Length: 265
Image 1 (spheres, rainbow, N blue to C red):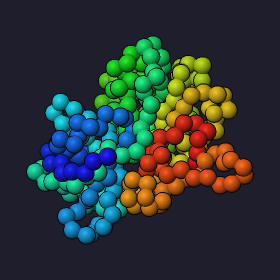
Image 2: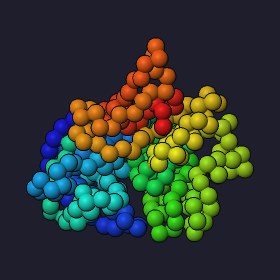
Image 3: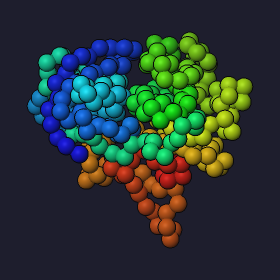
């Protein structure tokens, strides 16, 4: 983990409350593992006081450009959404444990499932998997059509399925509704699952496929204080504590990515 300044080179709204922010700086070259995140100081003073964790969407190591996609939900991210080219941002990066890709081999099939703002980290992951010869299938879910983003970029990496809860884009329902044999997404059709998004979605995926002994990973989204494991504001309980005692892991430093069965969601 390092601390430094990066320069905003582009910032645009790409969907309802969704912004794509690109920054450039020497620190970007160290962001090599998909699933990690950066901790950004959104303002120049003490308001907002705490940094905000933003996932890594894409990295151009040669040009030292980092792409982040985030939702302007609260005060801090609204301030960040007003960033302009030429502005400097103070970041800590890269942070956390990302998605494991080193053991993937040519010819495998990876299923990448994202919900809402959990979709962005899957893009950098998909690029690295494709570079290893892995077939990639995306299933991404949103509330409604105005919230959909990144579909064209993901389509360049693999087959994609879009799901919206109201049916205004893609398939109506939940992401789990398209994980069928008819779509070529039955458990026997893929080798590993990677997912990021809301807890109910992650819980459903882990509960279903852990019982089938499928290899899978979930990336948890959580509010954080320090981002480096010191404040204990983002702990989650492990699934099988030893000797009947509660045991916790820190999402910011032990995660945000965990293997199926590692933590409770």
